[in-house]
Amino acid sequence: AQKITQTQPGMFVQEKEAVTLDCTYDTSDPSYGLFWYKQPSSGEMIFLIYQGSYDQQNATEGRYSLNFQKARKSANLVISASQLGDSAMYFCAMREKITGGGNKLTFGTGTQLKVEL
Amino acid sequence: DGGITQSPKYLFRKEGQNVTLSCEQNLNHDAMYWYRQDPGQGLRLIYYSQIVNDFQKGDIAEGYSVSREKKESFPLTVTSAQKNPTAFYLCASSGDRGWHEKLFFGSGTQLSVL
Image (cartoon, rainbow over all chains, first blue to last red; front, side, top):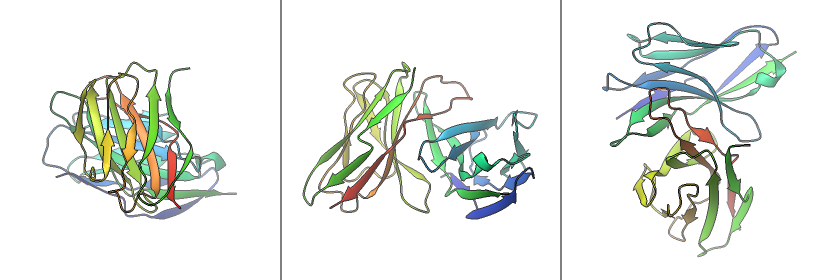
């Protein structure tokens, strides 16, 4: 069975500073994908970044980067130059293969990020 | 614009009543999913469908039912058997079957019990 752990219920960061949101996972499947989603107060889930288990380099998408340490089973999200609009809930998720193809994502409990002036 | 539409945004259920949450997508995606979100918890999978006329139970299917008669539609019924239905419900879809396959989400339905 898969498990995603996010140990930081809440985080504060100063505007323009960098912040790291932690995520560890547990799986016996050698092939998996890791995702980060942002959920603003409106409730919609916004895809941020993806890392595949066979990817050699850490994923980056603009101000978002993923610190992937496969041996430690961690996939931390780094947000550089934080902005007030980054205040939201952030979820780490892992892809689980479904017979016949398709995607089942298992989510962590999330980290509430608050960006301060 | 392509996307996923969930309706209504807010829904209230009386005791013993079944209610149906709507989910429509125009992304031409084969797979669709229903997740439930409770405060302080992540998303939990209720049901998923990989193709029309086929669907499977997720981790918390008891008290829920779905249908997939059309590719673009995947309605979720919360039955009276679901004793704690108050939650935020998110519908999602995915198309590409590659490793970068991500889920696209709707804006959610907040269900409350009267």
